[in-house]
Length: 253
Image (cartoon, rainbow, N blue to C red; front, side, top):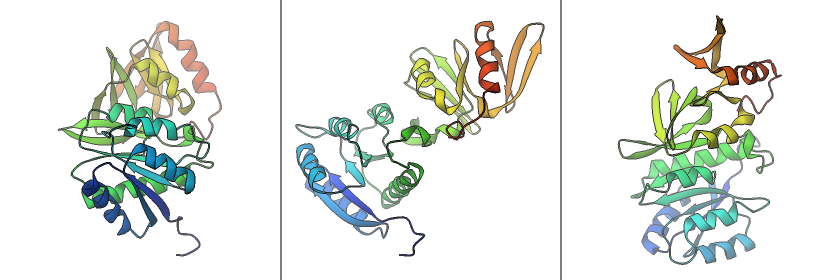
């Protein structure tokens, strides 16, 4: 491995079903970017392994007896030096929870070799972005979305603006829009440091993608790509303050 190559990963595969556990472990073992592969048959056994070993990424099933995958990820989230987490599951109903836990990827069973390879790539990219790893605000978050029954991930940097739809939010990107079960207020708080600002009670925008700001007879609008969005009077001052604020490295995330 050359001095400029990214460090090889140590992976821990957690699944109570031996065939599924062995399959993921075998696929990881074939990847030259993975140096070591350990396995655990339960969430409790995984925590014991994490105490003994320096683990870079945990590939975990979700539905397990005792300590399940979500509970395991919540424990890992409290680690000072926490490994990345990739969920490997037969169910797509936990995708939003995976987003809240900053999971690097969400792989649906049956597992395909290319999806494992993509997850490894995401882990290495996330490791390079996070220095130290706990500075998660600097990473370009990924949001799970459903497209034709398939869970995919959209990068936060791709999102131009967000529209509230009840308890859901519609994420607008250059290639389309995606409905996710996340309240707009949650995204406003979570993404404030990344340059997202509320311009209306139902609209959140990425200031880095604002091309124009129009003021016409006291009516303020912003233009993002080819879309003109109205700014409410109560949010106009906040928008101007944000646009005049010096940009930081976090805003570029």
